[in-house]
Length: 111
Length: 113
Image (tube, rainbow over all chains, first blue to last red; front, side, top):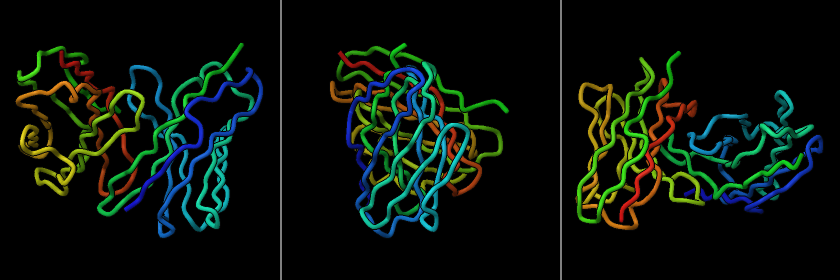
C-alpha cells in the first residue's frame, strides 16, 4: 500500500516569505498526489494536485514539485500570508480511490 | 453549490455509550467516505460507499463501528460502545464519481470521557 509522510510537523515563516512544505511517499507506482489545507475547525480543502507524468504544476501562489526519483514532493507557497496558516497534508490514492494522508505540517505565519 | 453537511459539530459522551454522526453529501455525489482524524494526525479512511453499497470497509472496527447509506444519499456512522481512543474528528467527504475530487465536511468532534 501507500504511505505518505511529511518531513516537518511545524513550519514557521515570516509574512511575505516563501514557504516550502515537503512530503515523501513510499509507493513508486503512485501516479497522483494531492495537497490539502486544513484550517482549525474545518475539513481538509483541496489546494492542488499533480500527476506522475509531470514534474511541476502551478496554481495561484502555489506550486507543487514532484521528484519521482527520490519519491518526494513539495508544496511551495509564494508570499505567504496570515490566511495561509493551517495544517497542510499531502495525500495519495491507494487501490479503490481511497486517499492515504500524511501526518501534516502546521504552517505558522508570523506578522 | 452547497457543501458536505455534517452534524452534530461536537459531541461529548462517556465511554461505553453509543453515538451517531450524520452526513449529507453534495447533491449528486455518488461516492461517500468517512474518515477518522485523531488530534495531530492525518485523516484515516474508515469506509467508502458507492451509492448505497460499501466499496471498502477494511479499516472500520466492525466490532463497535457501523455505517450505512440508505437510498444512496445521507449516511450515518455509529459507534457502540465508545472507547476513550475513539476521541477524534469524524470527517465525511463526497465525490461525484470514483475520482479523487473529494469535498470534505467540517467534521464532528467526538470526545469520549
